[in-house]
Image (cartoon, rainbow, N blue to C red; front, side):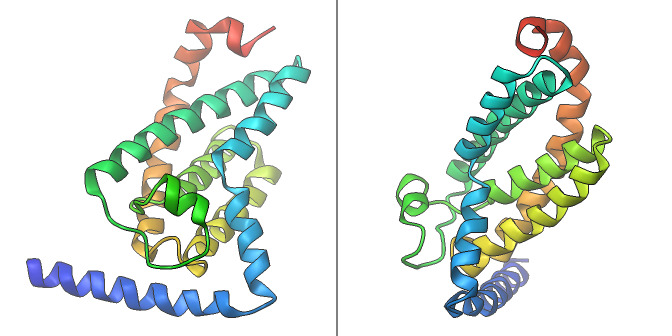
Length: 185
């Protein structure tokens, strides 16, 4: 079993390094950088706070729900990362990530992106759901291209993000009932 796991991890590094070569492209690198940052939780939380602050409708409740989902996702991923302690791939790009969170498994960005896309699908927000699904894939692969994650970090993030989607959609009615002041004006 140990030998099989070692083989899988070696292939993970090999395929991740192949994708990382794309990051050497002078045109693709800044695009990947933009995409990688677009999945940052604090960007999402800031935008969602503005939406929550200035809307009275459905978007008020949705923005609060998404923000709460992101916070739950962030704490869960951070806990898993500190349990597993898989180091990020060696590299220079993304010092803010490397310094604040040296662990890579699972990818918080991939988890968050998959969860957000899943929440949009689960809430029947279909045109936006499709856009977020494409965005989730781009953010996830940008993280590998820039050398911040291995492919297995991304795949684990997608799985965890999907599971969190179902959890949060299941908790939504209870959260709305328990915290009406947060979700409704």
